[in-house]
Length: 277
Image 1 (spheres, helix red, strand yellow):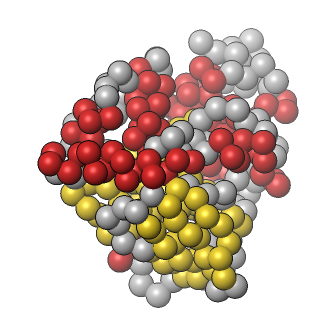
Image 2: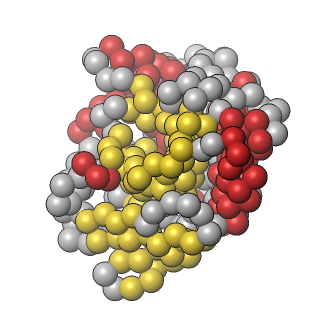
């Protein structure tokens, strides 16, 4: 399993270090710098140990985030594949419950990502058709994941991002829409073809859409199911989990005082907006 078994650093050490960074918001050097032999198997073993530590102190697992499903940002961050991380009751919010503005004080170099979010009604299989995948989804929403970097300057290797809690900061979910069987063809088409415009107070910042997320958020969802099917350390997706499927645009740095708005076209979802403090 472990690329670090012959070193003084253990899986437990790495998980404890990540938890300390998340709690203190004090960035550290990428783990791969001192442990160049780190691999994805080790990284996801750290994910499992980090989950154990967070649950031990009372946090409740709420779902998963998929990262780097947008190939347009791979070169920017020096990665070449999607990854995933956990979402927690302590990091999950409804936009409608965020009164006034959302605080950024305890986040490390935060960036905003508009994403499609699913809630699972049933567990998916890695070989399901898109129609079968839709039958596993209770509702769909547009939301913002605010990602953060435990590593200064957003400089890391892909394996570091897995160890670093998937770079997850918080997930803020907009209005939800139920997925009904008679609407499956419409949802399959619109999830792949819809577009968004991301704006700040200074005007339009970026454009994107479902095609940017491995061709469709549904395909990103299936990719996650396939990754977990090969994972020896972490459980498969389960009913009730929230899954956010990756950024529809590039990720953009954010700061207190800004307001971000996402206008959506071609899908039955509401526009969303978020003010930061």
